[in-house]
Amino acid sequence: MITIEHLTKRYGAQVAVSDVSFTCRPGTVTGFLGPNGAGKSTTMRALVGLAAPTSGTATIAGKHYRELPNAGRQVGVLLDAGAQHAGRTGREVLTLSAMVLGVGRERVEEVLRLVGLAGRPAGKRLGNYSLGMRQRLGLATALLGDPQVLVLDEPANGLDPEGIFWMRSLLRGFADRGGTVLLSSHLLHEVEAVADQLVVIAGGRIVAQGSKSELLAGTGGTVVRGPDRALLAKALEVAGIAVSPGPEDALVADAEALAVGQAVAAAGVVLTELRPAGGAGLEDLFRKLTGSGSGSGEGQQVQEVLA
Amino acid sequence: MSTATLDADRPRTGAAPSAPSMLTLTRVELRKSTDTRAGRWLLIVIGLALLGVGAIALFVGNGPDAFADQFALTQLPIGVLLPVLGILLVTSEWSQRTAGPTFTLVPRRSRVLTAKVLAATVLAVLGVLAAALVAALTTALSPVVGNASGDWGLTGAQLGQPLLVHVAYVLSGVALGMLLLSSPLAIVLYFVLPTVFTLVSNLVSALSWVSDWLDLTVTTAPMTAGELASDGWPGVGTSVLLWVVLPMALGWARITRTEIA
Image (cartoon, rainbow over all chains, first blue to last red):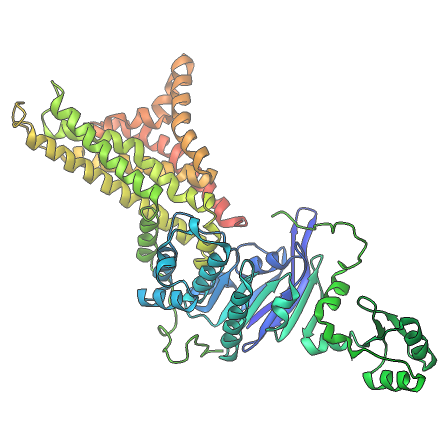
């Protein structure tokens, strides 16, 4: 159980995170979403005691991270896969952690096999690791102490599609056995498939949170497409259904698929596509909530707060 | 949430997890200082320097033949190089960005720092023992290369004072590392600062008293031979305060309070 309450972190006049509250329950995966610099990492760093919150609290199973007797046995953390000594081998990094955690050397080999680094890769120095291999090693480190909670910052970075699929099933399995997972990402599709709950952060504030279906329900509407866009729009307006421009040349009708279909059929207009707008994915919702999808063509301003 | 096992068929690795002991943390720190190429090479260089000094003492004429004299000589390389090991013990966590993972695993940062101080102390003691071993070797070989037979006597002060002084040197390295958190900066300053200090206090006659109280190199100079008289201890104390206690206290406070990047 992760509980974050009214967490605020300021760096001088800069507010990195403002009044952030959410909880992650056992048995669930929480996707922590937001553009770069939105405050995801700051929140997670405050959670694991690397940064002290200006106000508010972040606890794990009711305790501050620093109060956990052997933190790695309860919480597996991966914040920055690149933050390891380039001169150590993968096995050596895990061995050092295993000593602190008080788990046996056989557990090191076990997690190496689990993340697919057993054999030759385990004996290579990290300087020769790809980003994907570092992520796998980071996950192995997080899993080493057999924790009940996982806190992972952008774990899919550098993983190939196969690796992302593997990681998803790993996290799903972990949660299904009663574990709590908090995982951040700036890419929706990485999280969409595995998360039970979504927390969207932008500009240091939570802009939306809830289950996937709850969040998607709010977006509503039906995507309609046909060879004659103008005719289609007219048919819907006649039936009293509001329309707005959709993806590409499609329209989004503010009604259920059934009502749209009936309206179009009544007008005798040809359809090539008819589906709930939510199916277009969280992408639109995400863009809408974080205000980064204005499509103005200008480069998006990076809001990174320097720690 | 109590039974969240990763692998269903495997029992949990233990009952309620207990905090790692200070002994464990110290062993981890010792391992960290030797498990990279840089650390290993530094130890090899220290070993080679020891043997080199021993060989010079043995073969170059008029070398000291008594064990105590040989021992005073073989401490030279460890006095120069061990503090670098002490610096790197701290600064490599920042230069290699491992501070984040380290303090995530052991969030009570003071425990990690204490383990580093203990590990540095162990390294200093091992260094002194290695120097004694090389000195014993050269003393034993003295008659073979034609010098007079060695005198094996060693007083308590001749063993105790070197141990103390090398622990102080290594810890001054650790302290500077904690204060600066940068390997190159700490290493350069470790060698430059005392020299500047000595130069200034030698040049400005009004400051000559300063070196007797605050220049660690000057105050501890007799200690490698175990010749520090009782009136020298206050000066050792004040210079250790300046070069070990003060920077360590400042660095310690900063590391435990500020955000880890």
